[in-house]
Length: 195
Image 1: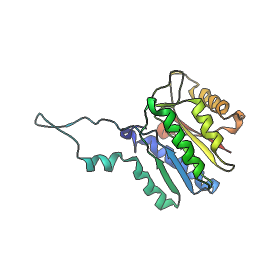
Image 2: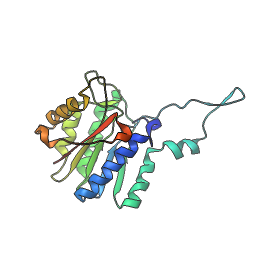
Image 3: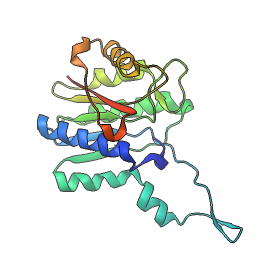
């Protein structure tokens, strides 16, 4: 997730659903896999002179780790896996991620949060490959949940296409893949699967 997207309307739907799922399933740990990519902000212009945004301002508005404060008010431990991510680093990134997930022995929600969701064909920085989802699903324990962010793409049935791909990636029946969404952000859907 590019940090410039943090705290937009999609995050309201994202975290509203994650907290509701966590509370409903009585799970007190959420691991957000951020697929973190820091974006370059444009400069401020002062009478034609360019200045960088003060780091404190950027951190206030674009620090994705600020979400851990929500955990303090809900009683849910929120961990952000914020290791920098690029397409070229994806193999090593997922090896480290899988070790981290395996090390968390308590019941948890693992939330995969790429910018766009499952790769439609050509995989880029903003996507996750189906086989990477498979690997994450396989290391989850009974009682854990996998949650997945999916942004719309240019097909009318985009959500159903990716629901099927997610079921295939996890080798489960289609009716085991559930969703949440909101009119607040009609261009995203969140899939969740209990193990």
